[in-house]
Image (cartoon, each protein chain N blue to C red):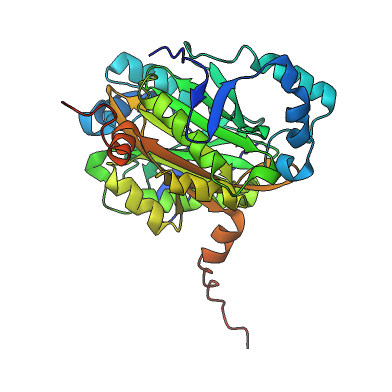
Length: 193
Length: 198
């Protein structure tokens, strides 16, 4: 179930491709924002931290072993990098993956995250042969969990005060979808002749 | 947070530490397929049960996160061991605890678990100042799920096929309750009758 995708991955409006060293400014443009960091584990990042993150990401382009991750830059025509999507192999035996995304607030609300996440779910279940993919978010992050619902994911957990997050009680959602459920939603990818 | 008030006295039960002499009784029910089906670590043979009893015998206090307190449930009248309950202190900063339990299937249906778990919740929230208690159970284990709801716990997670368990896709439920919810739901016990003085 190793996953070595051919890049770029193209969707109707987007290109998903590995990060390169030239992406530091684009990443800094959104990872430095308080509004973006609000629900992430990291605080807003400095330009140096972004440079370090981008450097790591240039090698996070394939999945072979547990813990491996794909983190891809999402480019829209004429806009450059508008955000990023990620897929992590959480369990090799049980074929579990975790999906994530971060987008620049200026480019939210136009369906880019949905389009990029759909491409990554296709990749996870087809090439990656994953059995189940889940995503997590803060219960207050409505844009994120609404997207999970639009992707056909099911709310499997709603944890209340199970941990401290940035000095307050955390409330968290976990959404998930199984391979057969995704296939059913997407219809046959390669029609039988 | 040490604890030396064992045994705990409930209406019909004593909750006490495990003793080596408990091994044959634990062996008798813990090796049953109906019990093994839902336990995290297999104890199918008497030697495995003896090793588990040794571990439980040492679980008598919560001194640091990661510690577990395990208590045997003993019926008051005939001192029959009917099962055990345990409290695992999983996180200190966020005050998280996890409760586990096993009952001899022959003794199930009498409300013993409900009685022992109520006492354990009192202990966890009252004495150990736990903020949130978690119970996990298999999605097919309807007896446990019903018991959790009866205790006022909320279903917080229902994972489907998120892992492999005993060679099959696992389905797992998480139930939880917060300290303020438990305090609010606990019935106020009537005061004992006092002798009239005038």
